[in-house]
Image (cartoon, rainbow, N blue to C red; front, top):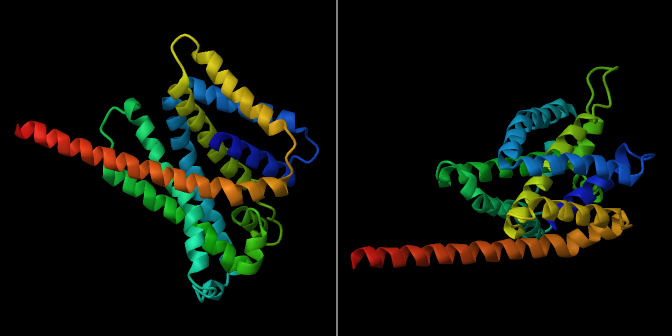
Length: 268
C-alpha cells in the first residue's frame, strides 16, 4: 500500500509539473522498471543507491533553503499556537505516519552484518525531524500559513521562487531528482520487504513481478487528484499512524517480555 501511494502520488505530481503530454503508462512503466531492477538486485543495491542519493538530496535541500533566504519572512512563523493546540496535535498524527516508518529497520536486521544500535536509530529520527521542519518552516516563511495550506506540495513550490541574478531562474528541475530518488528508494524497499515476507524459493521472481503488476494496474486506474488527496488525508495517514504505533507498542511489549523470560531462565 505504501508503494502504491508513493507511485500514485509521484505520477500526479509529475503530471501537474512536467509530463502533461506524456501518457501515464509511459511514465509509470519506465519508473517502475527501475524500481523492479533495484528490488530484484536486493537490499545491497537499494542501500548503495540511497547512500549515493543522500548527499545530493541533502545538498539541494540546503541549496534551496539558503537560496530563498531573501524571500523568507520568519515573523510569519509566530505566534506558534495562534489557532490553539488542537491543530498542532492533529499535525502530529500525520507526521507520525512518517516517523513511525522507522520500524521498517526491524525487517532489515537479517540482512545486516552488525547488530542494529539504538544510537543510529535515534540519529535517523533526528534527521527525519530536521527534514520535516526545514521545508515546513520554509514554506510558512515564504508563502504564509494560509497559502501554504492550500498547496499540495509546498516544499517543492519553494523551488519556483529560487533564482540567482537576473538570468538564472526556474531551478525547480532539481526538485525532480529529489522527488524521484526518494520515491525510488521508498518503492523498491517496500516491495523488497513485502516480497520477502510472502515469497518462497520456488516462485520469487513471479511473486515480485505480480506485486509490481498490481501496483502498475492500480496506478493506471483513473483516480482524480482531489479524491486521492482526500483519501490519504482522511484515511491513509491516520490509519497508518495508528497501525504503526500499535505495532511498535506490541513489539516493545514482546521484547520486554522476552527479556524478562530470558533473565529468569539464566537465574534458574
